[in-house]
Image (cartoon, rainbow, N blue to C red):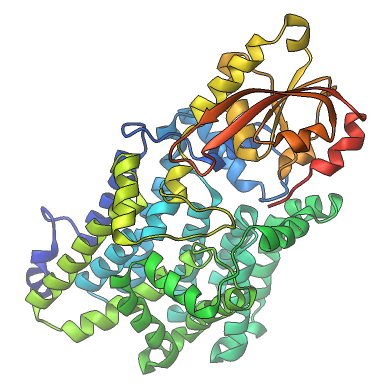
Length: 513
């Protein structure tokens, strides 16, 4: 009772601070997942929508769980932008809640719970990930859920919980193959700490068997398709990711998690690796170090690769801060206030709360420029830039398509250089009477050219020179403009009379990245 009175100042209308921050995170995304400021669908969302219409046990660049969830989501609530982003918003709120619960499990009071939850909430990388539909939002939730179950397992010394670890790991592998990184960290963490005793437990091996059983359909698909995902990952790392030295990688991690949270998660890492009362949970610290080491060796530039590992550091870090603050509630209030104000400053970089032109100026003012893919730079951060210009592009393509003579229109094919353009045509173009698009990008290549003859092709994004290698007649038809897109000019050509049978040409258009 005394503790409740002492920390009552942390509540909001009597509501537990952790629940309040969780609801704040949910509301923040629900309030910004719309078109009010001119932002539309994100590039990758078009691709996932098409994958959801073509359900399979695997895809070139992702396992099947995310498209399956999206297919169910569309049937239940539709495919508007708001409906599409409901699940990522819920996943984000769940991650915040679990971070606070981990702090509580470690012995943290209401301040520690609120601090951990608020630190996850304001992290720009988490704001971005939970702002549109992609497997990343669910991967972070599943990594955090795995850490929470492991914490319970180690705390209670309850080996049966390995079964739940296996379930979550299996679902994680069906969501993103990078769940294997968490598994690798967990395995090495077991070997390097006294928790290796669990290697003698049947429950751990049963949990592993459950994980493999859940993952089995995608594994079989990979074997049947010559391990296409491995080819994709190798080529993507070569042509897409920007080589990043260790120092720059760590600086990027500090920035995308928010500089103000750095002392918290660093304290959490210290607690797990070196503190006496963190010894039972040392395995979790090794999970982070192993994943970080893999990224350093691979020189990965993707700031979201480690995003799922930070809630399990922020929770013990918040406990360390709470112990340092003690009963000085003014200091605790100040810490939460500074963290919240810092989050407000960086909020426009994570979610669309400002118009594109204002966001571009704001990012420039703060000196923010994070390049995560080769050739992907612009005045607007990529996660905003890739929400613009799609309707205009599809309208331009539709105008070109409907301007063709009727006999050509019936045999016309739309060829897009990447899955964003192809997906936009497939999703937005159906109301404009456009045929399905084809592309050599990722799973579009696997779907093939369909019944396209190659006699008449409307191309998007390809150069005239590339087209002339394969077509006898190539003519510029239009150009779709977009001031803040990464692809500011999307040329549209009409190409006629393919020089070779399309099945012979198709292998040459493949590009996995």
